[in-house]
Amino acid sequence: MKRLWLGLLALLLVAPQPALAQARNLEPAGDWSLRQDSEYCRLSRTFGSGSRQVALYLYSYGPTGGYQVILVGQGLPRNENKARVANIAWGSIADAEPSMVINGRVGNQGSITFRTYPAQAGGRFTWIWSGTSDNRTEVPFNPLAQRLAISTGELDPIELPIGDMAQPLAQLANCEAALAASWYLSVADPATLTSQPELLNGYEVLRSLRWPATLLLNRQSLLFQMRMAVDAQGQVQDCVLQAPLIDQQDARLLCRDFTRVARFTPATGQDGQPVAALFRASTLLFLFD
Image (cartoon, rainbow, N blue to C red; front, side, top):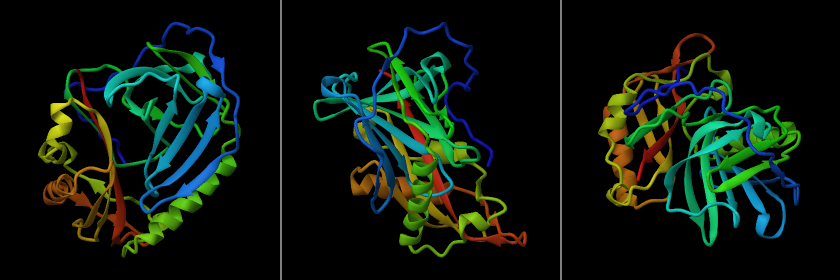
């Protein structure tokens, strides 16, 4: 599906950056762990020890989409879901490029959230509510990478040796299939589709969404995850805000606005005919201080 980039400024390619300082290597403190919830599957692993320990969480909210990555640790900068820039790479710190992230906190620990996407992941949107940025707003995912590198203005470069991801990603894919089955949607198996549902008016949809007022007043940035069924006529039959957990009324408004305005080209099956299919919408909302 064609990627749709939205915002006040078009996303520009970032030129290669000067070499960064040597990264601190945080060795794994345990194996990968997989968890399935009602709306997501999550891989997690811890690295380092003591005050330098960092937990890596890789969330999937179902098949056909990208991943949400959250790093949590005492040594990470703490903030209130603010838009910031970090150098990130699935690889070594020498490969890192400036990327927009969300800097928050979990208890007394800092957190850094960013979106990453495998090949052909669709339904990814970015809305820059205030301010401008020339930096990329998501990070291409490399399933062959064996390290994750990151640094910020407040964080010296670190590298997490994630190792061979083939088995963890296979487990995650199985979890995604089970997750989608648990929703009992009358849709085709994503693996049988020759094309995914395509949103035709993404800019119009995002302009229509009524974001939570408290989020705008506090100038907080968030990553919203939504799922819906798009029938063979291109109509939305079901919409669920999967994350974040916000007031129920705000969640209903977001789904209502999306459903009211969205226009889709339906998915097609192996016979070339339109079929009902799952559509996932991942929307990054950035508000600058």
